[in-house]
Image (cartoon, rainbow, N blue to C red):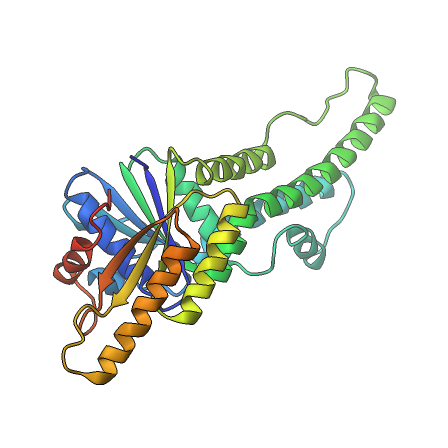
Length: 311
């Protein structure tokens, strides 16, 4: 039983709905299930028809939801560099706001969405509060940048730590020359930068561990969506993320006498067949097309009925 389930895919395929439905179903069996929205365009609150914010909110018995606050990750990461700038100032190296900003963005892409998402993932991956955690990730491009972020951040933090250590060595040498070998030295042991690197390493390890994590790609049965799904699966495999399942949403099951619907159903069947052929090692789950908006727990229950192996 994997503890962390991630749903990803292109925008507009219903990732939030499927993630919320999964959480709803899991909560019936597990005491505490958390659905985490890392998509900057949060829609989890709409899906569950409950006000959901930056802290875990109870949706129903056993089910909680949270929409990651984009500012949280930025604040945590920037505070490290502000502390570093303060240490430089103590050593007589003055840095203005622009220089701090340059240092801050050395190894991290300017966009805050992925940084907020990885911070949110780290928070709930490290917590023992939840039995199961379901992540609703942002559209494909964001997700791929998010998966690359631990290594990108590691490079940025490593650069900052190397610069800091050079300054510390020079300061310590100067103090020794002035006050002798007993002069106080800056601590070179574990610190917030080290903790950040270790945290990102843990996130990367968990995301690649098939014993703990499963990534499910949500798609719709259309040609362009199929191609993007194939590319996403390929990229996820490059990151060594355990992809287990394709969830095909909005599938027409009975076109009736509607010729237009029959034509669309035929196209969908071809698309699903193409997915099965190109990705034969993945499970394929189909979710029937729902009339109207899929919001509220009763609607999510209908979606969950199609996720036969949701656990």
